[in-house]
Length: 530
Image (cartoon, rainbow, N blue to C red):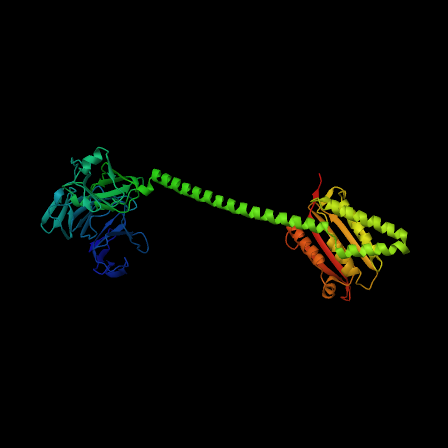
């Protein structure tokens, strides 16, 4: 119990409740700390009330508040014990507390935050050690009296001439892979700034360090850092285990501070963990060089193999092209024997009935034979020459046909026909097929159209007839070796020039889906003679 300046008699209980008596009226404030802890002592200072608890330190609240709101006294430094047995303010407004470990002088600021703590135990002259509950007083001279289990201790305020010694820290031991390093003195090694060389397997290290303080051996704290990282928090741990360190250079630093928080000079131990051989630059470069050499050899061998294969395929293709060229030339040199036989018989018949028509037919047929022989020796002729040859061929067919038909050969191009090149005898087999198996077998007056046009990349050709339709004609005709061979070789020529599906054949249908004729179209890359 204690009284304040206003005459209130305050009391505290072991279950954390407080209250006061004024004018014979009891005001009970129940559990003001919201914790089931005993309140051992309390005192008043500057309209503040301070509570000392059993295990939870010191709490304070302002008496000017209508409702007391207690806050714990904290600061950068901590009390040596939170079991508060006695409290008193000296003439310098320092708060003295007695605990089971001795007494602490606490410097607090205006907002009741701890700025510094001075501890007094057996080594500092306080022989009583554990203090007694509320056995504390201050006399008129400002001396403090502390009651302890082993007697009464008096404190006389005054200047102290005791100077604190700055702590020193030393390496005591170093373990590498859980084996003590006995070959060197780690403290001397660190002071000489030497670097300890380790193998790639030695990546687990332990550092032991220590600071000696005879007066306050249990109040020494330590911190450490590895390389350029931040310092660890202060703690009483004086051994650090480092496992799985990376290869390369490392520096381990440690520092200590005493009970007055005076810090020692840091000490540093340097090590270098060698890299395994596969991590070394020269080994990596050598391995890379070997890999590149192997890849180069494999690539060269593969390229040689591909070249040999391409050479074989090229020779094979050249042979096939040569045979195809010979076959095409042979095909160009020969004309359908049946066609020649019919032309000669027709000319013979004209000799008695129509001599003038016979002369025209002979001239046209002779021109056709001459052009066929001339063009067959060339790989390409002009489009103009091809159109003339087609015209002569169609004229001969027209003279020998048993029914009349009309034909047109036209071109729509910005190029002159004499400038555009085309393989010889490429169109004649399709024209022959259109006349013989389309127009001559149809029931209508025959019409044949051959149309050329160009763009920037291709020469297009269309052959249209109004015959019975190619698919119906194929059902009724008997293929000759010449005609079948001519169409097959021509199709292959087109595919070799323009690719697969270069040739398109379709029937022309009327609105009632009846067949009006056949359309043959293809394109070849545009080739000019300039």
